[in-house]
Picture (cartoon, rainbow, N blue to C red):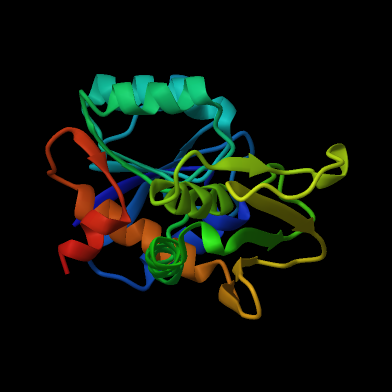
Length: 251
């Protein structure tokens, strides 16, 4: 049994993770952390990690970048692995995550969906085949309550493509430029509206042909399942950085 501390337990993703664990026998929510107390919770609760006193095996974080410092401090102090699913971190915070992995196991991914991680691998393959003969544009769509743009997933896709293309330049706002498109550009575009769960499309546009790779998430359940699977996987692991490729390799 894997006992989980859920950071962001009162949010929509928190609710999905709670529902996911209730349908499983290999894990449960032992405690929750959030500014707002969840309704009808059958686990202990604290407003912050500074006030938390709970026994658990791993932390799942679906909260806010502002929580990072206190969460990592708690995890390192108690030798707890962390599954970090929050997006919108700046470079300094990302460095802190990597530094923490020297002391504890850290599973860090901008998207916990199996399908998304598959299309990232497909995008890398396409980029290596097409080279600079095809322009690359990424379009992501999310609900109107999402705070960060572009999405962490869009940046994951762009980073994967840039691994196989030399000197890639990310362009987020084309109206700021009056020029022809450069070959090394990766355009990243964000749409926010309604209750869109998550849509990502990678466009490879060449001369007389276009390849599109897309993924559509129809509910938050796919991300919850991925996060819970990662938590069960991470229990007992050695300190270091882990991601979805490690989880898939263990299957």
